[in-house]
Length: 227
Image 1 (cartoon, helix red, strand yellow):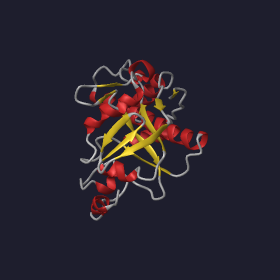
Image 2 (cartoon, rainbow, N blue to C red):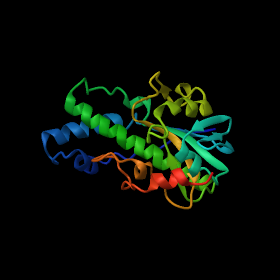
Image 3 (tube, helix red, strand yellow):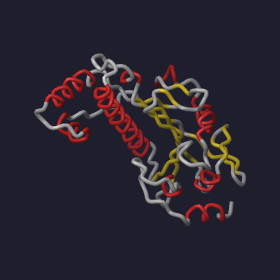
C-alpha cells in the first residue's frame, strides 16, 4: 500500500473565475481571490492505492486479494486481469472548514469547487503515478455505486483492502457507505485493451459528470459474455 500526500493542486485565479462564472474585476472576483489565497497554503489532496492480484472468479463475483466483490460487470472487466490497483482519493480534510466562509452560500459554492479541483488533481496524479511507476499501460476503472450492478454497499469490501484510512488520509466510511470528506472517490484501476467507462452502462440523462455516452447494447454484451 502506498500513500500519496504531496499532490500539487493548481488554483489559478483567472481559470477559477471562468469555472465559477464570476467576472474579473468584480466584487465577487475579489472575494474569490481572497478565498483562493486562504486555501492555497492548506490544500492537501491525498490518495492511497495498493497492488492486488485477481483470484477466484465466479459467474458474478471476483476476488481481489482476499476480498470478494459481487458485480457481473467488474467480473467481466477483470476476466483477463492479473494485477489491479484498488484506490481511494480525496480532496483532503483541510478543505472541510475554511476560515472566512462562515456558511455564506456563495462562498460555500466556491469552496466546493475548490474541493472538486483538489480531488481532480488527486485522481490525475494517482493515475499518472501508477502508470509511470508500475508501467501499468492502458487502464480503466470502476467505482462502487457507479452502477446498479456494483452498488455503493460494496464500498465496505473496498475499504477492507486498506483498513483504517481515517488515520492515513483522513477518509472514513459512514454506515450508509458514503465517504467523508464527500469529495472523495474510490475504485479499482484495471488493465484494459478497450477503454471502459461506467457511464456507458448508465441510462441516467443530463448527468453533469457523464464521461461517455450511454450504450444500450453494452449491458447485453456483459450479460452474454462467457466467464
